[in-house]
Image (tube, rainbow, N blue to C red):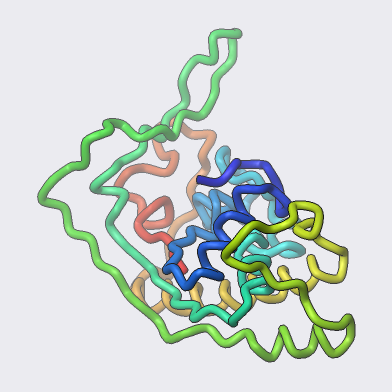
Length: 220
């Protein structure tokens, strides 16, 4: 469990890194709701996406926490990109504007029902391992060895990120992002030509059957 909005230095992320240090397999959804609707997001209209188009360009589509986990693991983890398609049919979101109780409206994208829909088709595409060792070597040649987390108790004070480390996390996240976008294109070869969706329109906003919404997702 990650504290949403807790930042790179949160203790829960350190606990995840300790699991990596112990040799555990860790599933990460690195997009972290940064982009829920790529088409609407490019127009600055996605009501769920926390980053605007300029921030996406500067920071990327992934949370940098994945870069931090990789950078401070005692051994470079094997990073396997995974793209899934069809989960929006198993757990559809409401995706509708509702009254906010204050005279306005809010966008509700909560899951419609806690029980999954049976009989749906979900496909998963697994990519080749993402190589990031060159980024780690380049960083350490300039700034010295990175602090590595052990599987035992770890100092929270040492978990705080320096500015140059954040630049490394960003570079690693970008590398993973490239691999995931490549998988997404392979998984959706006929996706081009989609009409932009205006999430302000309650008749068209990010429908359950819209592939741009949640027809695909990213793991690594």
